[in-house]
Amino acid sequence: MPEVKLVNITKKFGEVHALKGVSLTVKNGEYVCILGPSGCGKSTLLRIIAGLLQPDSGNVYIDGEDVTYKPPEERQVGFVFQNIALFPHMNSWSNVTYGPTVKSMDRDTAYKAVRELMNVLNIAKYSGFYPHELSGGIAQMIAIVRALAAGAKLLLLDEPLGALDPRVRVSLRYELRKVVKDLNLTAIHVTHNQEEALTVADRIVVMRSGIVEDFDTPENLYWRPKKLFIADFIGKVNIMKGVVKRVVGEKILVNLTGGQLIELYAKGFSEGDSIVLAIRPENLEFSSDIVKQDNSLTGTIVRARFMGEYYRYDVRTETGETITVNHPVGGGVKKVGEKVRVFFNPEFALVYPYPDKGIERELMVEI
Image 1 (tube, one colour):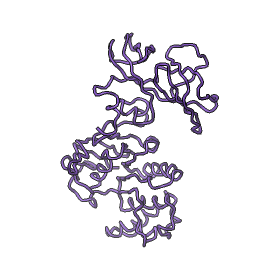
Image 2: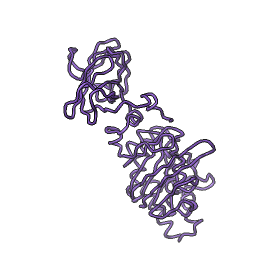
Image 3: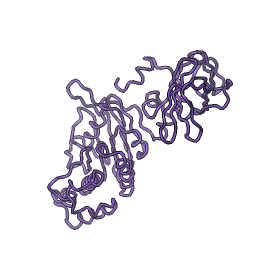
Image 4: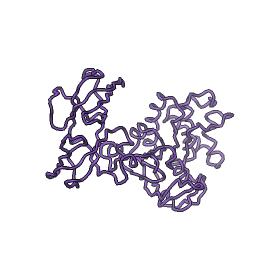
């Protein structure tokens, strides 16, 4: 279960600055996902850890050893690609035993380890199958066993589920986490799929334009994001602007754009500060009383969508802003054009200082 430590990693491709001083530590036995928009540097970072690329500067430590300039075969890592990389002329057994064979490992020991891995993943029955005879999910599991067969304790996964159909992808993500934990591995998993990262990771690295924006647990990144960018990037939020009118202890009275007064829980603000309020759609509720209430907004439904477990409504408020509300299916159906009052619990509201460069700039996926 190696620890992985990256210290000030930088990498350029011509004029493109792919990584800008990335430093982070993945603990022994952690399952870490690297999440970010396309082009943010996440796959480049993974390849540097694997030794497939060398950084322009900085250091890579695996289990306390500086491996920055060591070739991939000396790092004891397993690498799984998005495109299932199996030898087409070999059956599954030959594919997974290829690594131990070329490394001249003891045959009995290696074969025993491979059998155990295939049994853990419940794929031993496919040993005699060729890649073209396997489903995408089984083929990727074979690729994972091959990555681990030579004794790797660090598993690197670059969009490993991206080429699979949605149903298989959901099932396999849990199998991946289970095998990592059952075998006491450390895993670093690159993905652009937020749901995938939130459901399998112990912690998530969020990257943007070659830098690490945050590195925290899925729960903290979703419910307690430190930055407005993180709140908007992971999941969905409604964003409203306002000015602090009064501060009372840990509460602030905010005058929203358009004149609506609301009360919020927030620290570190003073009277007159410009703020940004972010509220997730699932934390907004329709009030049964159309009469004005504290922390509520009146508006008209302008769009309604059935999402399976809930309805998603877009509400145009009297202040001219459009907010999104996720409403349980069992809570009744609203109609487009219907007047509603939307209420929120201030404990679930996220409050941030107004960005110096403006909201649009703050939320850009490339900076």
